[in-house]
Amino acid sequence: MTPASAADGVEAALKILEGRWKLVILFHLFGGQVKRFSELERAIPGVTQKMLAQQLRQLEVDGVVQRIVHPQVPPKVEYRLTDWGQALCPALDALLKWAALRPSSEPVGEPPET
Image (cartoon, rainbow, N blue to C red; front, side, top):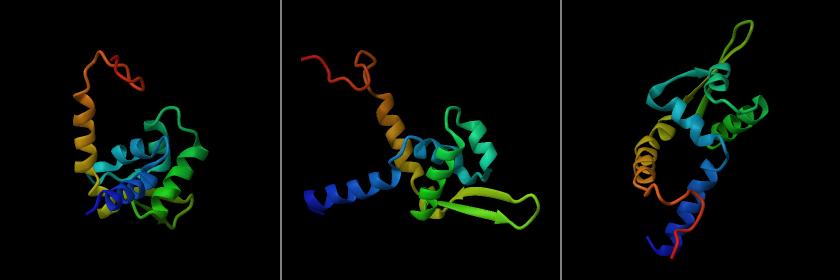
């Protein structure tokens, strides 16, 4: 892999995960959990129905999340990670561990003092 192809790969991965709520949604679905839309909505304070639906739809189109529709009245729709989506778990765990190593004296979003 060259630096250019690595940069392209990172850009492609981040494009799939970009969006304020996508990573939060993924964390709620890790471990094989299956959740209804309303369960995700309750679990993620601050997300609007429109934004949650939009982010779930994008994750579905990208093959990260599977939407399961049960043919009943009223309709029952559930979401779960695809195998490929579940494969993100170790990478995101590593990201959490990396973030936890940040020295507490450095505010998030600001460069360290020189």
